[in-house]
Every structure is written in structure tokens, then in C-alpha cells.
Image 1 (cartoon, helix red, strand yellow):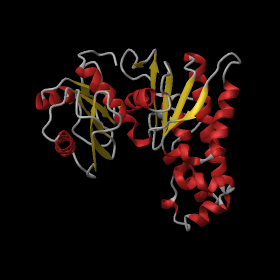
Image 2: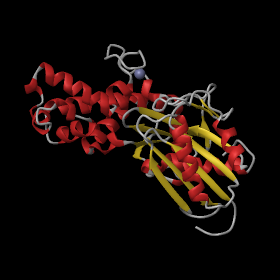
Image 3: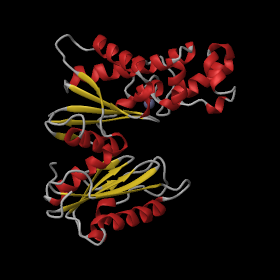
Amino acid sequence: MNGSGALYLALDFGGTKLTAATRFAGGSGWAAHARQVSPAGGRMADDWGLMVALADEVLAGRKAAGIGVSFGGPADFQRGIVLLSHHVPGWEQMPLAARLTARYAAPTLIDNDANAAALGEQRYGAGSAREHLLFVTVSTGVGGGWVLNGQPWRGSSGVAGEIGHMVVDPDGPRCLCGKNGCVERLASGPYMAADAVAALVAAPGAGPLLWEKSAADLTRIDGRLVAACAAAGDPLARRLLLRGARALGVGLGNAANLVDPGLILLGGGVTKAGPLWWDTVRATVRDIILPEVQVAIEPAALGDDAPLWGAAVLAAAAADGGRRV
Ligand SMILES: [Zn+2]
């Protein structure tokens, strides 16, 4: 941190948390950082009010030269508009960039959280100094963002990177999106847990450790418990965790064959499942990629703050008056 140079305001509207931070141009780390839980059952106006209070707190009366926003849902970068939130009602078609610019008299750029996280990792995290990368978060959902030639790649309608709904098993189970056998349907924490519960309902003996650790209360089974029981040798948990890891590996391998990013970074809660999961993802990618394709599969470095770091990059780009970051 230093006291000179432009001040950038970075905002992260996550699914469950709101975060605001400031950063000086050329400084290292955050000048100020504030986070609050998004109220359960809240609406857009509640999140907006909380975020403005956090932003005012971290700005402490100073003026931002630019504002960058990571939004946890579909957002139109070109128009600065939030399309909707899957968690909070009232965000539909919200002109968030214009609204922030009106309030803080600073140019604003917004993007979805996966693109922002990819950008954050590329500039400040595990992808530092790489021109190309694919960032994938494997958590309650599976989302992805590309950086190609040093710039976010959003696609022709802003939805590039949807690896979570890449179909890897057309005969697989039905996903919320309406298709069968998506990466997210097989590899995300809640879906692995739901499949474990269904299997235990059908045959309680299929996963003795899952049964024991959940104390026969199947509502306590989540992705984390599936991963822990898989590591401890539970056959059902192991089958589901490795099925998810293979599904993800097929998706990543195909993405690598198509785009040749050289580096894929994985973040999110499921990536904490341990070496069994990582080894399976990497081995599957090796099975899928062509012999001439080189790709490293590595953990992301910035954790929950990756989208916020990306927002800081967007803030600097907004201050420079450009759309290139
Ligand atoms: Zn799907």
C-alpha cells in the first residue's frame, strides 16, 4: 500500500457475500477491505444498500479513479448491465455500471465472477505472466472463464467459459439446465451429495462410512462429506467423487484440445477433496488430450478473493478509459 497514485475501487457481489476493497495503482495488496454476508431472503435493494455502505467505508471519503465489479451471475460487460442473479431477486436488467458511475462519479466496468476470477488469477495469482489460461471453479456449481492473449475472452454473446454445462455423458443424469450428463451435474458438490443420498435411500449398505458419518441423517450429506468419506475408503463416496473427477477431466481435456491454453487453474471447494480427486482429474485430462497438446492442471491461488482481484484489474482499465485490461 502507498498513499500516492490513483485509487481503484473493487466490488464483488458474490452469491452469499458482498466485498468491497480499495487498491492504489502500483501498490501491493489492498488499501482497505470490507466484507459482509448477503442477507438470506434479501432483494437487490438490500444488497445494493449493503454494498454502498461497504464501498463508502473502504473509500473513507477519497475518490476512486475507476470502479471494477465482479457479479455472481450473468452480466453484460459491453453494456455494463447485470442480466439476473440466481440468488437474489430484483437484479434483472440492472444497469449496475451506470448506477455506480452516477453515485461515485467514476468510470465503471462489470463482468461475471468466473471471468473476473480468471483475470484476477492471471494478473495476481497462479497464472501470473501467462498469456492464456482457463480458470474453472468447482463448487456448488461449475463455472469457467478464459484469458486469451492476456485479455478476457467473453465470446460473441458474453457466455464463453460455460464448461459446467459441457455435456460429457449424453446418457447421464438430467441437469438443472435441462441437458443430460453435464460436467456440473456430475462434478459439483451438491449433485454428488444428492446422488449419494439417492443411492443410500435405495441401499443403505452401499456407503457404510457415509451412513455412519451422517449419523443416518441424509440431509447432513454434502460434497465435503462425500470427499472425506471417499478419502477414507467408502465405496459409494469414492465412486461418486471419482465419477465427478473424470467428468471434469473429460471437459477440461476437450477444452484443452480445442483452445490449447497451456494452463488450467482449478478453484472452489471441491478442489480441496485431496490427491485422489486431483490425480483422477489429471489422469483423465492426459487420456483426453492429443499427444501434442501440453496443459498443466494447477490449483488456483487467490481463493475466495480471485473475483475481487479481477474487479481491481477492471477498475484500473475503467480508470484508463479503455475496455482492454
Ligand atoms: Zn447442465
